[in-house]
Length: 308
Ligand SMILES: NC(=O)c1ccc[n+]([C@@H]2O[C@H](COP(=O)([O-])OP(=O)(O)OC[C@H]3O[C@@H](n4cnc5c(N)ncnc54)[C@H](OP(=O)(O)O)[C@@H]3O)[C@@H](O)[C@H]2O)c1
Image 1 (tube, protein in one colour):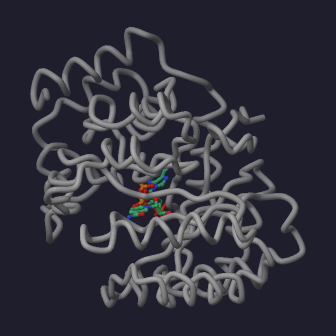
Image 2 (cartoon, rainbow, N blue to C red):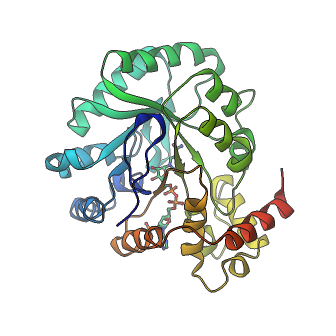
């Protein structure tokens, strides 16, 4: 059975592995398959699902296929990014109107009265920061959502992912606006959050949710994927002695357990659409943390090569 730590100040007990439901919105994957994977996640003890209005049909499918099992999971969705990221067509809008209308749409698609966690899908642009936070806390006060959060990386991790944050520093924002949860990138290839974000989030009592914990398994690609989002991790995967770091363990297992070994991480969202991978990932999490020596190997290699 997977551990269920407390998700920071929300007090929610959540499984160490959460389901990242971005791929589950893809229209090229049949409904019946997505239904099976969503239900399997709950059957395996996963009780945390992360989605977004911009993940294609993800919210709608969760609403349709899990509506009878609502009591079994915490649902986190997002606002500020609309359209369809899975098709590469989206728009960013953090205006009051967009956040309020987006939330209504999410409630309708998910078939829930109350959203458990509403997160900013990135950092709002500086000129809309005040307004966007005002609306976020307002919907919580009005009881339309239980908790509020942000999904955003610190400057170094964001720049590495090809999404520079400009003047905005996630750690400063976390100190200023006391949201309940924070979602960020942390994995064996992009460990920046360990220095630039996790300590602040923990100090502030926020629940910590890791996205891309497997770095999209970029080491499986023969050639460099297009764009920096996958391309730069792929380059690092080539540079880093990943197999050596993992030792006798399969690299995917090592990578996932490495993330879960960080004492500042509550949940890691795995974004799989395959039943066998979901079972594997839960199995890895159930094995518990890596040894101190194993963690040190991965940390020291990263810091030695890309140290901050
Ligand atoms: N801006 C944001 O807010 C943001 C950005 C990125 C991600 N996220 C959240 O984080 C979630 C996860 O991120 P992600 O999907 O980008 O990254 P990820 O979980 O690091 O990687 C997902 C990839 O790993 C593969 N995989 C999973 N388990 C595996 C296993 N046991 N063996 C081999 N391959 C395995 C999956 O392939 P298969 O499908 O073939 O298993 C998939 O291609 C998303 O769904 C989303 O909820 C949020």
